[in-house]
Amino acid sequence: MTTNFEIEKFNENNFSLWQFKMKAILRKDNCIIAIEARPAEMTDQKWKEIDNNAIVNLHLTKIDSIFSSVAEKETTNEIWDTFTKLYEVKSLHTLIFLKRKLYTLRMSESTTVMDHINHLNTLFTQQSAADFKHS
Image (cartoon, rainbow, N blue to C red; front, side, top):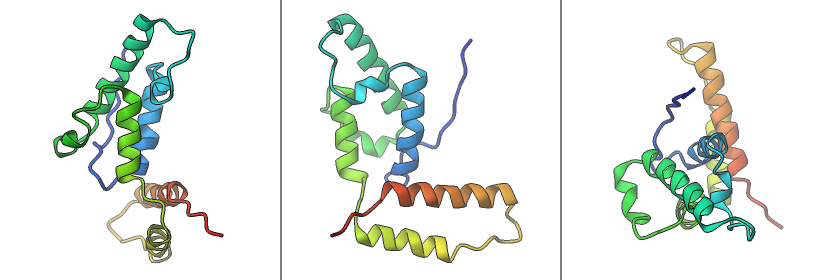
């Protein structure tokens, strides 16, 4: 049984949500381990199969203009780390920006309740991903 999932492509502005959904896809395809280090006991053939599957998923879920930032990367782990370094912003500025969006969020008359709740949940997810630790 094949199930197709449609997620919004990674476009530089939706990293935390894309990352969350991408992890779900990698789990579903049994290749989540590819974003981490290769287990010592895994055979070369099995690792290559898992890594290639994960790379395909990553490449098919991003917009074309982002491709150049990871074109030379050869493993899922390298691609994942590059995206994280480039697009995961953990700063006080980001947290304040997201909190301001959350505090000023209002439901318009043309929006359904479910769409509004989904937007609210997206803001919560982004805020959690941008968690800023200060001393």
